Structures are given as C-alpha cells and as structure tokens.
Image (cartoon, rainbow, N blue to C red):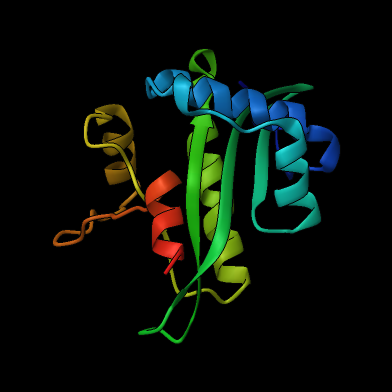
Length: 161
C-alpha cells in the first residue's frame, strides 16, 4: 500500500452502514456476534445526534478498511478529560499494512490536540496479536485494575430502589 492511497477521516452520518459493518466484523473476530444489537439507526442517534462517540475511518482509495470508535472520559486525578478507545479494527486482508498504527497515531494526535491527559483502551486477554501490537507502540498494560460492568436486568435492578 502506498501512503497516498491511505486516508483517515472522521466518519459522517452517511457512514453508519460502514461503521455497523466494522462492528459486526469485530464481533465475529472476538466470537461475540450474538451480542451485537447495534443498528444503523442507533449509531446515527448516539454518534451523530447525541454526539456520545466519534469514529475515525481508514480508507484505502475508496474502500473503508478499518475504524476506531472513541469517546471522552475524565480523570479526576489529572483534572482533565482523556480519550477512551472503545474499538480499533482493521479488516483481515488489510492488516500488517500500517492502518492500525495510523489510526492509533491519529487518535493520539487528537488526544494531544484536545489537551487530554491520556489515551486508554481495553483488550481481551486472549487477543495476543493485538496485545503484541499495543506493546510494540509503547502502550503499558494497567496492572491492579479490573473492569466491572452492570448491564441488562442487573443494571435495571441497580437503577431501581
């Protein structure tokens, strides 16, 4: 791939089908396809109407080949916002060509440009190719931290009394 064929830009509302396609590809890779309930309409509402997330799309020519979905979080210790990378995914046939690194680099630039204190994300413990990639760019795994989650009925119960 020549660098002049690579383009990374912010997604637009017309890209909802592309974003959903990447989400489905990622879910297939992570063996979680049964958990995808996102629709183009939900993405349009939450990303482009409510502005709760942003998406970068990597293109080779006119072909979308990867994406990064992210949003702002906040560090009380730093006293400023950070960026949380929810998903980074490149289509299998375009891996090892620099797209993942280019997406991560662009996201790091956005983090710095916006004055954010950090860029962070989670990675599945079994996903060694991604772990190796993240380590290769200097990312550091967070020891002593475990992610917790409330969803579905448990979340509803917690929101109740």
